[in-house]
Length: 394
Image 1 (cartoon, helix red, strand yellow):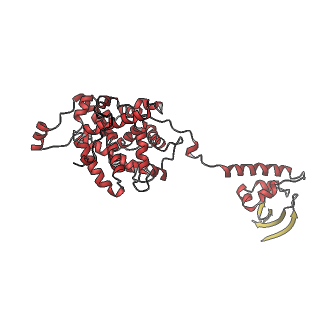
Image 2 (tube, rainbow, N blue to C red):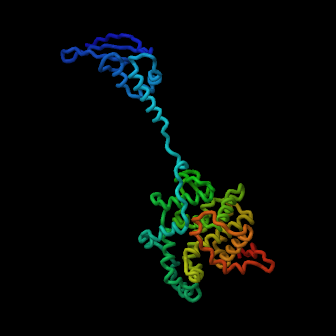
Image 3 (spheres, rainbow, N blue to C red):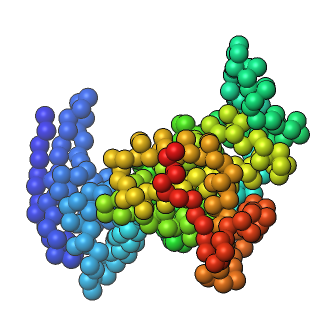
């Protein structure tokens, strides 16, 4: 049996209240309970304990918090109003909390090619080294022919450096490695001339020529070496402008192409040339592998850039162009490297004394050896003798 007694009152601040006294008969005993606006009241009817029992979310939803927090000149509800004002402030603070945008965080420090390379030199790559194929597997008559007429064998002391290159090409992009993230951010910031880092995932990566929101998906063929070569291109003071020229062409309304994907294809050509021992003679001569590969990568990218720009190529021509560029690069590695040094010498003569835009770039050099080739770059009238376009595909 239950009886209700309802009393309508008005709170001290003018807000309507409906109080009910209910009588519950349980176990032969009568229990009286006060309820205000449908909420049980455990204490008196002054409203203080009632307000304390209501969650802030309920008050917010019903508009009670705004009405009661407005306050008045009454003395009886001062304590209540004070509590509600504090609750209002806490609620507003919770609503205003927003995640900190990546661009507002302190950007990662730029990283030089040599620092990134040192990371891999000091990392245990044993498992990756077991899976590399540093040279082409030949059988039968091909072994004899290669021994008699093929390129010289790579010096024994350079084999560890060569194997490191192939191990890096087996290494995937790791979000937990700070060096990996710095390489990625450095490439983006140098190409786009921005100072802030960008989110790890997102459509902004398509702006520099990746195919989707995650650059890692484009590195399947070359592993982290694809990023290392791009890092070298943007961090060398002499090749940074070339990188931006290529990037600018990649944004052309008609001749556009995905810059990063194209760069990764240049790395793929470099790996094929190294595995087929096309670069062995140059590596032996200079007593290094990584430096030669970096130069060969830049030279190949320069070659593609000039063909693409002067012959008005478009993305529909990319398959044929890449095939021809790879064929030419493997057949003419020495000419390709010479052309690169001539190109850089001509650029230096146009801009005067070279200045390094980034102190980190000083730890990124490997082009100095090309000075010996410069005297062969100029004709009798001091003009650059570039490789003729008509001979590119022969």
